[in-house]
Amino acid sequence: MQAKPNIILISADSLRANHLGCYGYSLPTSPNIDALACQGTLFEKVFAPGIPTQPSHTTIFTGQHPVTHGVVAHGGKAKLARGTPFLPEILSSEGYTTCAVDTLFRERIWFGRGWEYIIDPSLHHLFYASVTQEELNDRAIHWMQTVPKNPFFMFIHYWDVHYPYTPPDRMRGLFYKGGNPTDPNNHELDEWWGHPVGAMARDTWLRTSNGLITDPKTWKEHKAEFEQGARAAGKKLLVLGDMGEVGDQGVAFHREVGAYARAAGIDRLLGVGDLAQHAVAAFGAGGEHFASVGVLADALNAGPGVTVLVKGSRFMRMERIVFALTSTAAEAH
Image (spheres, rainbow, N blue to C red):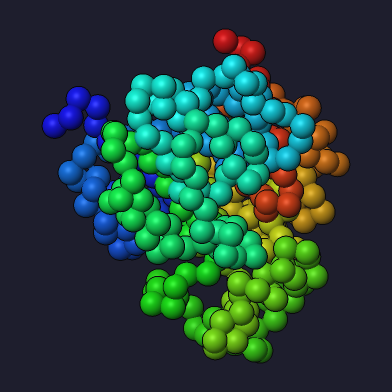
């Protein structure tokens, strides 16, 4: 065995631990990952200090909290300081040949630091996140077999479970338990088609060979999340933004969320958005509605020993709530 081992770092963007068999998920979604977990080391309690792609991957490569390195969200004017230690640069200086099979350098310039090779097959797609694992694997395996003369460090960034939600045909509908996902008489998503993200989904990744997908995301997953949060010890706080993916059932859905949060043992519900006010009303005492995410973030003071569950559609920018919570925690220490 060579003194310096080869290193392969794999990132499966947006893959949730609670949807993997090795973390207790009931469906057989991840047989290969589960097998790898059985042969190696499985970390049972790992928490991402930054949720969006850019902050979290900046943390992976720097070993620093987003509040420290300054990249706390997508967009904005924040830049990673040139002197910040960066893993590919460190390994390159130690004699490693470095290769990224990735697209992140197209979003933020520092993701290109330290890589001798950058391979980006997403150039063949209109949207970079549409690149498939097959394309990435083909390039990665070819590079490993033909290029490195020294020990190498390779980073592979998969996007398959990130939106757009376009599974390969052999897997499409594999775990779907509903009736007809493309029922033309199902109008539950009609309202969402009017939202910019909904309109894009309708015209692209929700169109299949059998027609347009019309069956919205079910209540089951949201319910499971509230149950998990409610089982935590101590006080429980739910920060809820509008969930726009539920179509014309939005008002009724949010009322159900508020009532269920109360029944599940949530102590306080803070809502933001037109639909979330219906959840606040259904929750009753302990519920409070705010005019904007910014106002809610400024007023948020969870206190020690409080479990906080943050939920809302991507367009609500709920990462600002997470940033407010992590900033408060950092100041407390």
